[in-house]
Image (cartoon, rainbow, N blue to C red):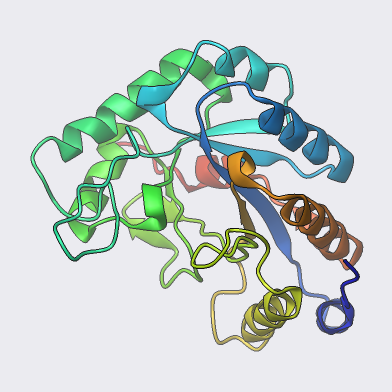
Length: 257
């Protein structure tokens, strides 16, 4: 598949003209085990030299996953809900933490504890709610449970979602979830990216938030794999630089009183 990257590269020229920093990060969801897809994800991270933040489902971790992640420092574990089960009421969109419910706060704590047990200091204390949805009532409890960051989708509306909890979202999702789960039309994807970058460059949305690529290695088609590789390379070649999410969360921590 031949893709015309010109609209994106043209926008990146404007970023370089204005000497604007473009931090880039990569989040990949739903890891539970070492699989051929995870191996491919790891290889792609090595090839592009962009670390991938692997959102792991804590209660479903299989024994093969922690050593697989430990073998590659470019695979950075973060917390993806608890069981990745929707508790949404009838008629509502899927969400594990989208509505306040009994046991939900405890699962936040359990999830962090399990991930710390499995991954130790390699864990970045970022909470990724399944389906990118979280009820506002849970936000004040994230810090007490151990988290220093929250990641959903679309440009953030505030730097912090609660005191000491930084928001770092994702903005590029190449999978056509409402269709065949292959690659979204590339022209549409690129147009969306250009709009996102233009809004940042012109100050309509937060320019400092790292630009996030969101992938799901377990369901990738060949075209999704190829697009993911190519878009990372285009962005990095155009002036983007890998963001250190762990350092951002560490810097955001406020000393306890």
